[in-house]
Image 1 (tube, rainbow over the protein chains, first blue to last red):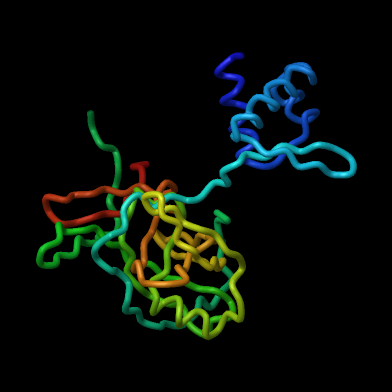
Image 2: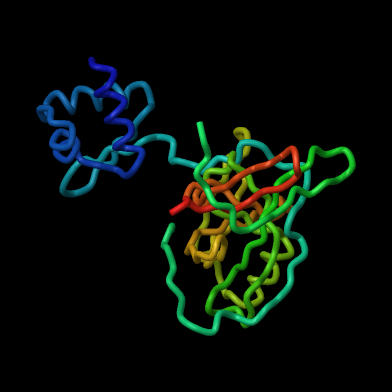
Length: 96
Length: 140
């Protein structure tokens, strides 16, 4: 098994659950090969298989959690002041 | 190597007894349901993956106006899960508005923290030796 392929597969699954067809297309590998990789990853608990009526989906077993590397000792921003709301519509960069 | 940034907004490091000085920035927070915009300080934390953590008092204020959270997520703090309600808020910093998912811990108070999701969109100049932090922009 190729390590790079496994890394790519796990990365894809950590973004969202995917079917074997989707994964094999994105990774440019055969359906059977992809299934074999997924079976192995499922056996060691890295991925979970979800069966739907139409297809089998695979999902990464550890949903991503945002990390806070250290919990700060200090507490900033516990006081605040209120000001007038923005008067005009403003341009916003969406990071959600 | 030469730095080609133009500094345009000065912020500072706060000092407290027994704690190494820490960089903070002034931010404005707004959401349409709020009658006001909120000016507050946030700890600059490049170790935080997401955009914003709301302090308990700030969160309590916002929940007076915003009926229910937009979502729920756990933050991972050194392996421990911190359950958080999430709110979509607009944050003003460096003359730009960002729409972000802010985390409000369901228990406790971590203070207000600004993380990499916003910081990685900005130029920051940390001058720890002078206890100053600057927002910057590339020289044109």
